[in-house]
Length: 501
Image 1 (tube, helix red, strand yellow):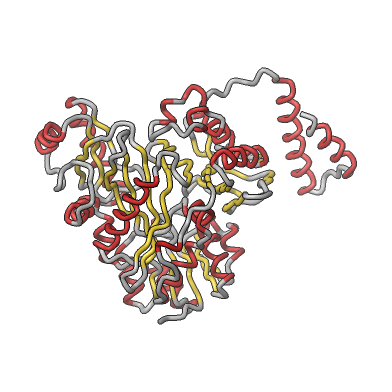
Image 2: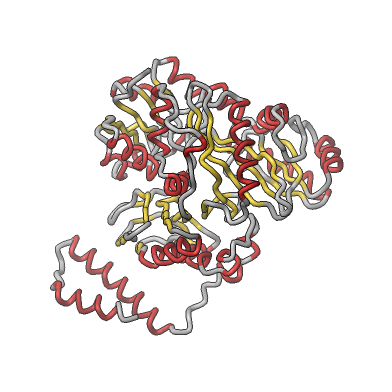
């Protein structure tokens, strides 16, 4: 058994801080790596050691395997935690760690490689007896292959990148005339995103739910699941809101899908934390979609309803410790929801909104958790994903969790950049969401309400509030430049006036 004393976190932003917090609780030293664009990032300040690994582009910094390995050796780190994204599902990175005697906090390179190739993953699951969406079993070699396969499977179909993830390299095909354009577009995007233009075809499940099961597996063959997460609120195949338990789920279906998830993990001798993702149709038939061999963005909601620290379990498994609990020891307690807060403008085609944070006020109170990395005065770089924080709430019931999320979103104030906060509020007030009647088409089916940015009827109050926020920004900038001072009493009177609305 290996006792880990120092971990290099090969990532940035909120997930790097999230990992470091657990390390601090476990009395494990932390090492941050950062690009030149992230020199002032909060994860750099939080770590005990920090090393610059290159210029802003991720290709020469956070994706630079040899540089990260070099820093780990200089810092004498026992282990590397990859977080999610970047190198988290890179088999070569895991191999290099092993070659240098560094513990990779994740599954084996072989498993990462197998599950990272969607075609191979489908084959493994078919052999294990796991339901899989009907589709091709080999990469498409030509337009003729695509035409024949689409006809055999039956339209609509979806063309997917074999090495894909995050919605990249995917094209929905509703009629035969779209196949050529879809095939070329999918291949081009896959090549650009993953360096691999291999694609395949799957049957498109109409009105699907995206349900994933969290799994834990130690090095001794013990595998359990930590129940499901509902991830159907998506835009362009990118998750925006997740909740657990799923409003779609029955106890019988949960038990059946949980067993299938455990079986899938055992089929590849999985170790560590991972996720088995499924599509569920309107008749509650479920199909294997993919396996994520890493920590998921939405892991906090599972932590909240189970009380289990996922990062701590990753570290313990990597040290060689057996699982501390069996399936029968676990329960879902209450309901949790996560909203991903992006620096982007939903009312302007979700354009990224990098820039300087002028003011930020994060929500507090019972059942509220914020995993973020930005602060007042911080410049959000344009080079990376616009996710700036995750807002997580918990309640005894789903109704209470929704009400709590509404309250938390109301309290969440960020000025200086556009964010998705108001967009999330609209979702929380949508009747279909409130009733749990939604699938992966929710956003496109509710665009009018969600993207309607007409001024409210009581416009005068909103103008006053907007003017006040602008006033605070000007005061802050003036104070930063030592050009003005506003007495606290004056600020308090204006704040009291604002609170009347």
